[in-house]
Length: 434
Ligand SMILES: *Cc1c(COP(=O)(O)O)cnc(C)c1O
Image (cartoon, rainbow, N blue to C red; front, top):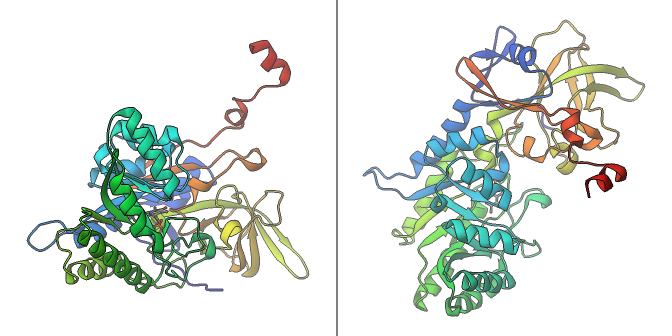
């Protein structure tokens, strides 16, 4: 297993102490307790600026727009900072639409994706006037047409193309292979566009593809891009006009040894290919999630017990699979580091949580010099961390803090046990309420 520590902008070590921007992590745990998610505003904003500056030509005109895929981290504070920098959003549910509207996002900056949009979600998206609905199947296209008819409007849509390219990532986060549930099969795309163009309540405006997540090389993107540009050429020949090309997200980050292309290089490579192939007037959308927030967040946890054995030693901490599910779900690697130097003897541990599942682990075979009570930082936890948290074992979800320079802001309170069952009733209580 890789053991490198990713370099995290916004987090640093000085004299054996770790800091989030200007505040020591120890101070944050004293003020807010553990487990605690900590995000660096500067790290999020600088990743956004790296994308955004690659989207602007030297003459100041724009070659592409960023729609943050909010499922990676949908805390309102994160959304608001990105909105202020000019980001639009990529949504995958009615809940995410509600969040985007709640922070005052312009509906025209929203694109709505997902394979299983309900009628209520489609109706709501059309009512508020989202920029585009990314359609993932023929039945969905027909449903949108029918709903738009009852609302007496035309629905702006893209078809999500499944380009059948291998993104070389974990099978659970690969989405652009023909065996995946996502998108419209490549060989059916032209036929589906012809059908869409004939539907009276459908306004074909774009084309979309998203091939997966945690992708660490540019070549699968270029393969997908070429296939999609070929389709656009064909569509234009047939008189079906495509105004925008949505290239999805998926750029990977360094969790501990990966070396994905940097954001600027990656964005330039894709946008240059679009222009080299003569599509200079196509509006391009990018939908990064993980690469904007993943390395801008960490999860702090306290060591409860060190349990030594013949074959295995366990470092039992107070964060668990319910707080950070990626190790359990994908066997994902997260670097884990103590936040202060310890005199303890280094030992090899599996870092595990208190949840009653053998799959509840956060890191395996990690050499750590720690004592009970020490604080560990689980790195690269800003994406697909808190958003995947659950209340399993009636554990309240962790607090979230955003650090901005020398200030720390509690951007989500720790959940109390009472709040976890406040919507439940015994049969007796329920019948009294009838
Ligand atoms: C998840 C998702 C993204 C973002 O993926 P990342 O790997 O987090 O960049 C973008 N677009 C769509 C449609 C998605 O489902």
